[in-house]
Image 1 (cartoon, rainbow, N blue to C red):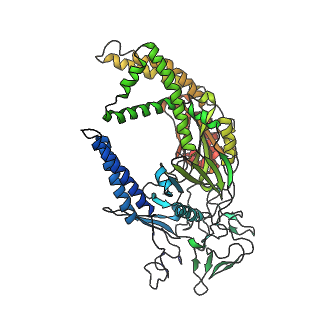
Image 2 (image 1 turned 30 degrees about the vertical axis):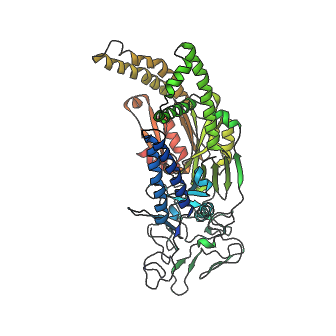
Image 3 (image 1 turned 60 degrees about the horizontal axis):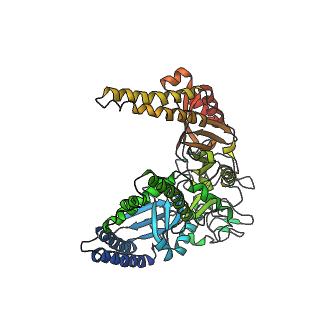
Length: 606
């Protein structure tokens, strides 16, 4: 991290670690909750009982029970050593964690790099009042989790790290870097000559304040008096009315009193100084929560009647079969004896299994989403859900760059969809962008307008159709690929009935080709770029124009002959790359010009 002159933590600055005359006390290290030891003791008791049963039930050991006891014992020892060796601390600049017994690990992540602070709790830890806090930086290597903290400690960590991004009434520590007009996400900032607090690279060492609605990322807000700063309304870096700035004491008077965090000038040497907010000075009062939606009973039927229900039941039956085998119980043979091998028995088994599969899926959905709530508080979306394992996921509005719907083919006639947010700075496994369970399409559209910070409804815009040549291309692939596979099998020394088998795919592939073509569409309306496509799962993506950081235009040999192209959209949000396949050349040029006029000349000249 590049230091700001005069900032604690910068080499050569008085008060910095390692600097002569450093007098600033370091933030103390914290420990995990001592209840982790209690959790280990519970695991130890359960493992001992399981191991005893594995040895005493039969003359021969029940090895799955013995193995489970061994793993449980190792887990109990691991809990004890983890409590002994894990330490963490939160400073004004970074979060650190040290852990490990045989192999020591020391992880450091800057607070300006933290993208998510989520929490979860499994059943037994939750009964003991324990929570796991997941701190994500957008990269798996620097992300980590604090497992486990007590409920109060977990809430304190979440509050401290969330307050680092949205401390109301605190002026920015340095002047924000100004992006070029219309520059997209990731464009380097432009440092005004002589502006205090700007590093040589032109980017500020402290995250700039939030730009007004509709302004490109990185554009500075305007304070009420017209000076560069941040817009009012709880946005970081606002100096509240009635507050005064003192170069040596920070903010005094008004609502911002007692919170250090403004840039000043040392009277003697004229160098800019920065006083960052002290964690203990941040008010623990959280903004009022605005409820968007909570669990609805109508969701159960929508999520139960899916093809996944049969797969879920099959997995459970196989798992139960293998769990009972050590005790001499063959579940499959028992089912076969009860139902018989005739046609009537198979029909009876299907009539029992299919409703049971839907019931199991409904129960699984209720357990996972029990108590679901989606609220907005202080510029952050928060979801809470779970019966046995509870999860709390936070998503900052500052990171939101769009939204998407996914409609699987089998449930598309029911008009249901899965909703995802397109977030910047998220890595796989950090919570992702799933914001709602599968709901009705009309309901999802209404909720999407409340979820997006600007209240837009981009997923309802009419889409422009793709040229008819895109249909013939998909029909050609659907018919030619099975034919080529059949021809290859015919050349091999296989039985005569083998080579025609791929041709049986053509009656299935041709309708899918038509479905894939009908799914295509794109448009640019207001501040959003919308693209849609997909056969087995139709995905509609609405991405903010400011989130587009690059384009790719690809043409195969056949596409060049037909005057079509595939346009790729590069972004730092969501899946990082989206496509508008098989558009005409004129449509491709129009799409680029409308979405990013500042990039159009560069792309088109290339």
